[in-house]
Image 1 (cartoon, rainbow, N blue to C red):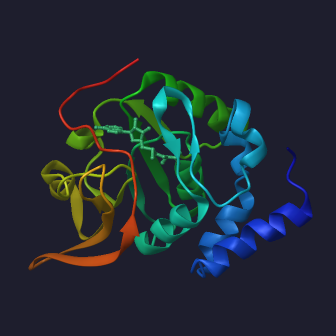
Image 2: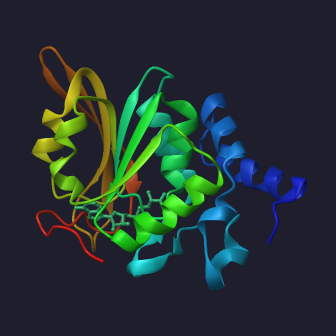
Length: 214
Ligand code: SAM
C-alpha cells in the first residue's frame, strides 16, 4: 500500500489522539514511512495503529507506543542513543531523525540484515545496527545520553543503567512477558536513579544472556 496524503493524515491523527503531541516526534514520524518496515502479508496494514508480525516471530511495535516512548525519551540533536531491540528498524529510523547518533542492536541477525537494507535504501547515515545480546548494552560505545529498550525486561538491566550518562534517560518496559507490563522512565542523576511509571504496555520479552540468533 502506498502512503497517500489522506492515509498520512489519519496516521498522524491516530498518534495525536493517543497522546503523541511533541512536534519534533510527530515530524520524525511523518518523515519515516512505516510501510518500508513491514513486509509480506501485513504490508497493507502498515498505517494502522497496531503492532504487526515481522520475521523471526517478533513484532514491529504499535505506532502510538513508538511515539509515546520516543516522546518520553526527550531526545535532542546532540544525543547519542542506544536502542536495544532493532526489530524492523522503524523505531531506530525515527530516533535517527532526532539524535546525533543512534546505535541499535538485536539478537536476530536476520532482523538486523533486513533493517539495514531499509536504512541503506533511505541513506540514513547516523545509524549503526549491530547483532548481539543488547541486555549487556554496547560497552565499546558507552556512555549514552539516552537508552530505549523495546522488549520487556524483568528489571531495568544493570549493564544498561551503568552505560547511561549522568543526566541521561532510559525508557524500558518492565514486567513478565505474558502479563501487562509497565513502561518505566529512569533518570540518572548525580544522586542516583529516579523512576517514573508511564503507562501499561505489552512487549515481547527481552531475552537476557542467551546471545545472538540467526
Ligand atoms: N523496535 C522494534 C521496531 O521498531 O520494529 C520493535 C522491537 S520488537 C517489539 C523486540 C525486539 O527485541 C525483537 O526484535 C527481539 O529480537 C529483540 N530482543 C529481545 N531480546 C533481545 C536482546 N537480549 N538483545 C537484543 N535484542 C533483543
